[in-house]
Amino acid sequence: RPQKRYFGNVTRLDARVGELIARLDDLGLRERTLVVYLADNGWDQIDTGGRVDPLLGGPRGKFSIYENGFRTPMIVSWPGTLPAGRRDDSLVSALDLMPTLLDFAGVASAPPDRNGLSLRGLLEGRGSLPRDHLIGGMGQLRVPPDERDGTRLLAIREESGFFLREPQWRYVFLPDRGVEALYAIDEDPWEQHDLAARHPERVARSRAAVQAWRRRMAIPAPTRRPAARTSVAPRAASP
View 1 (spheres, helix red, strand yellow):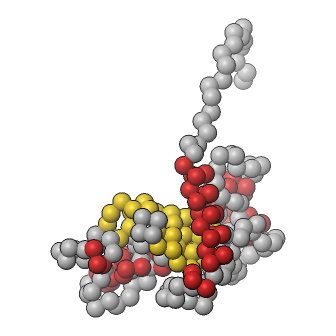
View 2 (tube, helix red, strand yellow):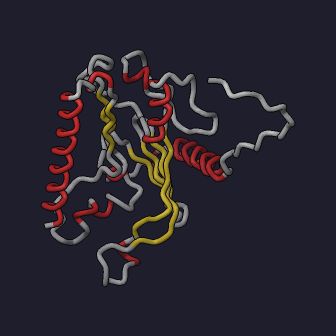
View 3 (cartoon, helix red, strand yellow):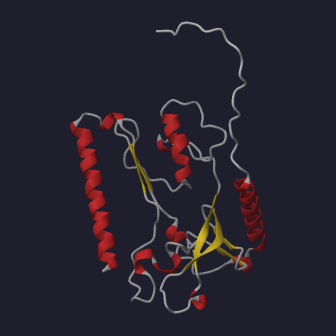
């Protein structure tokens, strides 16, 4: 039943998006409108036999640090401006959306305190994205099955979890549990085979990158100082 409701809502959303696109066509605005379609979680609705939470994608879906909860598409459409039907497996993030929109709007560059890269060149087919990895984290994670009290299928606690995603590899770091794992993500998309012991140098390098990212993210964002007040003679407003 939860899976039926989930797919019913997906169908409803798709229908509403179709109505929106049709309305843009009716108004003659489609070729003047950049449409971006995102998803916030990417788990599959697998049949788990009721043993875990099917609506949340099982033990490696929502509230886990594993790939099945993070691999989501970004679909971009702009007839007459962007080539249609292209697919690209570059590592992108929702944080790239703001600099991308600013770029298309004619803003020279995103503010220096913003994260993310403009995807305009990639979307227009003018080269690759200058990025070799992505790092992300969560502050709430599922409680491991052996720690549950048996009264709830899903238990969540405040706990840090991080990942580093490269084109061929995915590193998982759960510092509170002392867990590190490494997966050859293209060959093992369900992350069943931990290769950390075989690649200690890659694990150490990934851990160092995650720790540096954590320190950088902990720094408060810069704030604009109020402009110094000066005495200026009043003048008539310009028309």
